[in-house]
Image (cartoon, rainbow, N blue to C red):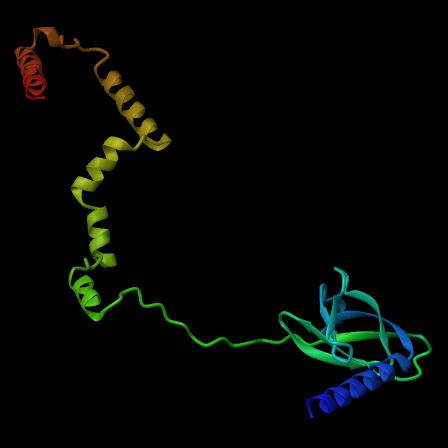
Length: 210
């Protein structure tokens, strides 16, 4: 029985191959392009011959292709982002068949995927209770205009042109007012000496503490 089945299978296979060989060969050529715009070629399209053992080939970067097939073969054109198209080579194609294959863009809506970074609910609850809520816009604005923030910016930021011009104008105005008066000598001022001694003493203490 197995021997008879093997003979029948061999006969059918031989008949199919003989039928395929009897079909004339055709030079199948063409170009693949976007169906929405004929001026845009679709490059590197995969072409699968469904009638010849699913042999595959691909078009070049300009969408052009050319390969040998048989009359009546069904060729499937597939590319990422486009709907597949099947082209059947007609009979009596006179040894060559040229075609323009339009590919319709296909939009695939993928299902929503949500990432949950916590392995268990207990870890989520622990992190949720330990979270530090950020300040709102009003609190951020109050911190930015507070006296400590402004003084820190004043000590670190360089003066702009307007501030330099204002300081120069103030110094010039002071010199004009005092140009006809005697300038005080800070060396004869006991308050200045007291301030100098205090600064020296504080500096020694700060160095000793470090």
